[in-house]
Length: 356
Image 1 (cartoon, rainbow, N blue to C red):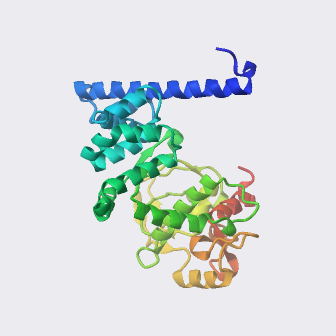
Image 2 (cartoon, rainbow, N blue to C red):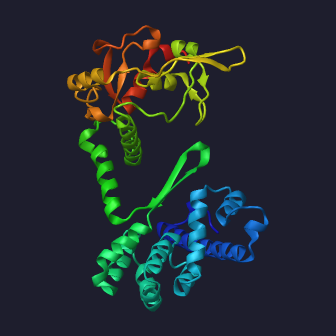
Image 3 (cartoon, one colour):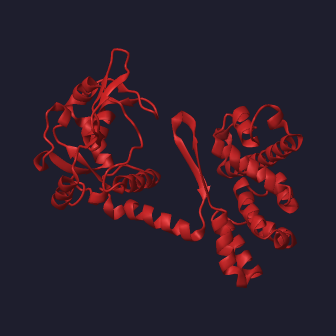
């Protein structure tokens, strides 16, 4: 095979198409191997609780990826025309998943129309394929719109798994109504008009931050305005005061700058340890920013005060200009609202952390 640099533009496109077709064939071959492994009961004979767990162990891929592969392999057992097109490299795994959803919704009607649907999906884009299948379902059962919505709702799923480098991987599907709610909520926070023109985040990063902000707002609003117990971070006093070193937490180690940011607007408890690090006394949990002071801060700042930022107050942290661990007072004059991005930036720029 010639090196890419020696290919003409048309030759490069042709070669890329061949590589993609070959990849789809290998994906179909892999699905067949997974099906055969399940038929033999191989995963459980090797001591695994599921085929997904077995595949995760032998492939090194995240659980979410393996779960999709197992689902595709299982669905293909009842989709002969789809399986044939997949093995020929004519449809991708993502299109197979769309067809599999249609098969699960109406198995008998899908069996009758599978060949037609596969031919349509072959030439459709990734965005067009789901619409084609949705249109097919409406045509086959125009009176069943309500039942269709309920079936789609029953197919909803959200999977969380630890991916590479400790990242949390999210995957799943939502029915159209639920998906619209989530989309609107994310778009409300990821609206470009709310962002600083100099914001260097990608659209995907903005949506990820928006999802975290929505979850944080829910937690902050629970229990009468107090943040419920969710992540216990034990911070040695010298780390908090001096801003040096690492802090061990349940999710993993964090830097001192992050620890100080978390403590800036949190619920704090004093814990005394004996020489063997066993707790011997624990003080009452106290909210660093009382609710009344928080309301006054929101009325004054009306959102993130970083120049050009338009994030509303409910998505902001209360930042101590001089951290309370260094003697800063929790007063209106020593507080300002910052969104999570600019709160993190403020602690990174804190002179206390420049020597890290």
